[in-house]
Length: 260
Image 1 (cartoon, rainbow, N blue to C red):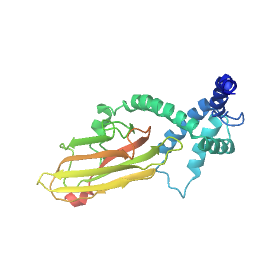
Image 2: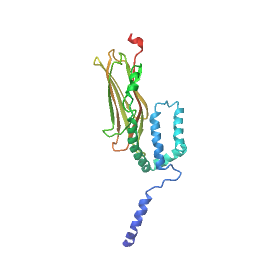
Image 3: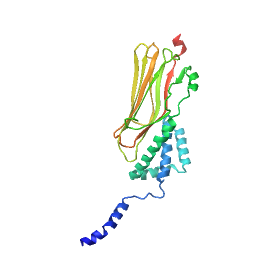
Image 4: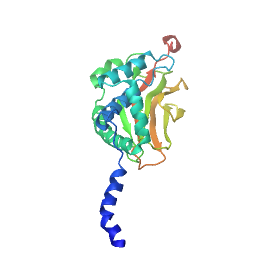
């Protein structure tokens, strides 16, 4: 009797192992196409994050373009996401591949800096974006990739009464089926020539557009501007990411009559 069971054991193991693999239905968006679609989806989200929710016409245009590009309908996408959520192994594998791709491609895109020649004239304007670093950043919770710090020294184009605003769009990316917290902290500090400081900070836990505005604090000239973007997650080993786009560091001159 025992020999009879052992004889069929290899066949039973094959049946059990293959039975654990759920076959993807043909009417579900397949993994390769779903990865392409989610790639565009996440990039679009960070680029339109500052569109007011009450005015969602442009959001709908982005969504329609995305679905048309991949030749799928919103209904097909929604039903496919329901299936992948119920089968998280497939969705997790898609996001592992997606995050690897974003790591490579966003890093390449973010290498594009503002050209100094383009900025020289703009620096003299009443309102200018001082940000010279990456326009698009992909951050992970690991220690070497979870923080972006910056320092900008003032020059002769600054005037007394300047105000500073630090803004960005944020979009969190998490592998399917995972339930853990992601968050970010942003900070802005302005140091003045008279050794006084103005500062502000904000904790971020949801996708959207965020900013810190520091109005005129001292009659002295600004000496330097510094700050940071910090990203954290419950589990540093999980393939989570945070996309940060449309980063700006605006310097606004006061109305001319204030300096006269």
